[in-house]
Length: 472
Image (cartoon, rainbow, N blue to C red):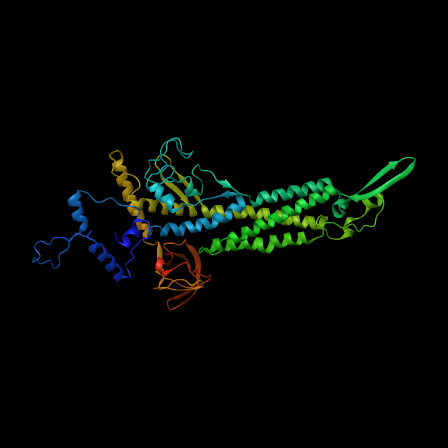
């Protein structure tokens, strides 16, 4: 068998390798011909004029077999619309997990193929009795994919894995502050000390000013919680997607990032910079100690003025989180499914992504449901008609694309075959047959050379069919 055939069989090569290399195709053909596995066709009636005539191979197959050959999943080309929608969903899912603690998952190519082949445990056509998502009690036999687990970012069992959320960290901080305020007096909070009077008759009473070890420990614990909060929201800020082509979402995301970077983190840094305690009160008696005005000792972490300012910053952040959660959930929208008919309704990014999921799964084999089943022939015909109409509508305005004519070099520049459908400011997706999809913004177009806002790694090669695309 030729090298190229081996590569295709082993999955090492996809697509049409000979498009720009006809000599390569000829060499591979000669390998097949010369090793004896190629059987020349006997030409009958060679003198017959064939000018203007044509023969469709699929017609011959139908006459010989009485049917079309079995189709197979198209693993290139049909995933573009899903990739564009999915990357946007995932971008916002990466942020919201910091706010609600729910880790959302996204469909992979393997998930699509498992569903297309109706494998046990697949997400979109769950069929294993006794191991079904909780929303259904019988195997899913609807023509539309099941929409209530991974299409909503959930696991197979319609739940989320969880992680530490910012509100939970804030709750720990506010509880620690409340405990300190309710346990210790203002002068104790500022000095980290207390005063006790020891009576030992017939000797006069003795006043002792000493360190409040428990308060020192409580403050150290509070500082650790605040530092953990800062670390968490720094990661959260990095996760916020600010390159959305939707202006409203983009501006709201920029505001969310600025709230962390320009408001919350400065407030945290200011509070952390204050001294823990100040013991320069000069008092030696309990009467003098407890009567001393703690504001005279200046700014410390637990001084009322500084602590109240910090509490206000925490309260404002909590309110902002609620607002941001509302925005993100608004972006995701809703996705509901009639479990009797399988019909899906909704809005927002989840609904948009589901539409591409439904389109792609139907395209994998013409349909993922057996439309030839006698029990549902009529319903299947109607679904097939709807699928064709949906596909026509979807593909009419999905993407504009351009391929690399040279590999990326790790800089911001890449040479493209054609850039007529692209403009400066466009958000585009860059992908190859071997590399994951990345998002970049075009900042300059010079002839066919495109400059992006960030470097494109050198692993994105022209030989791996590098290309960029955008929603039409």
